[in-house]
Image 1 (tube, rainbow, N blue to C red):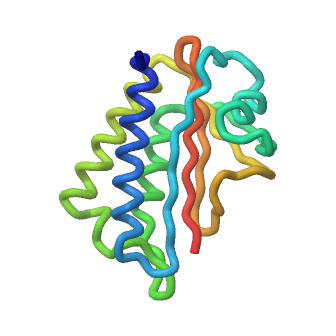
Image 2 (cartoon, rainbow, N blue to C red):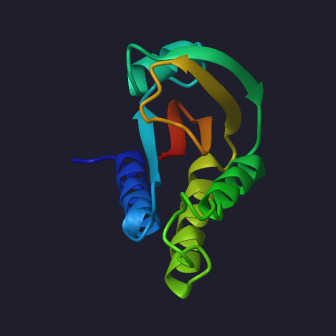
Image 3 (cartoon, one colour):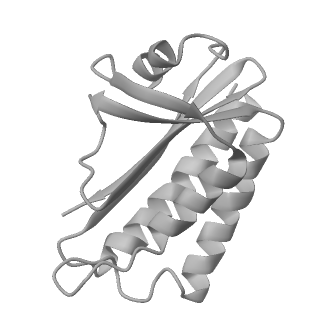
Length: 157
């Protein structure tokens, strides 16, 4: 039987998939990718070990800073609202469409619930990034209760 944190991660990843699908739908030389990984019972462990366990053994931590849920939400929102330019851009108008606003609002609520009362860190990778960041990228670690969660997003051409 799936735990409530497994269900939360699954639901967030489904919403992230919907969001990226729409951002990429009518894009030009642009691909957005975002994912949340769970690291059960790893809160309090060294951050590089959490990332290697959750994302990839090849991931190499470049650095980490204390962050907040608000900063995580601000970063996600700023990246989703990235306009691009004439040569490379996400699906025009999606981020401000009714559907785009609803998907982002749902994600914001789910991510706030996941991080509520937890510790949030921003980090960057020097190797082993799961995506190919070009235009924007973000990476956050959330420790909540006994569990840790890694949230990474980026866009490329």
